[in-house]
Length: 188
Image (cartoon, rainbow, N blue to C red; front, side, top):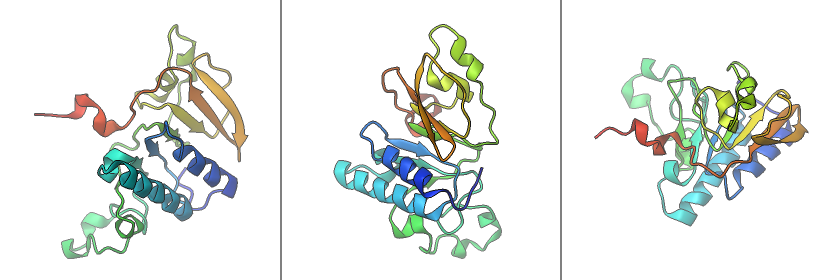
């Protein structure tokens, strides 16, 4: 689901979740300008607080096709002359942020706004010792925001829907879900 405009209450909820102290990364497929403006503002706030680069202070991941006008990487970029690639006119560039645009479709994150096109496996939660992200086919998350009710899960607290979206919060200890902190992907 790559909605250009989302319901105000859903946007407000996502931004409130992003401001939580235990959320250090957000993966979201929406192309809503106001949402990304808020997420980039939070990233900027975290950069100021921590002194870290944007990607380490507060990792943001958008949809694999990019977010035209918001993210500096977008579909069709490679078809443009190189001198027109990064002209400073995107929201990401203007706000000094960093939005990862994945080639792999989607990245996990502390707050994972799950895309409607991606398969989900809630039956994995029935296994002994299951964790929240076992249902997301290898994409880590501590909070899963999804457009359908997946039922009760022993590994997560389920919150009533906001604009039809359900929040599942892991009951396990916090784990870092920034994919760029995953040691398996670092090569020396």
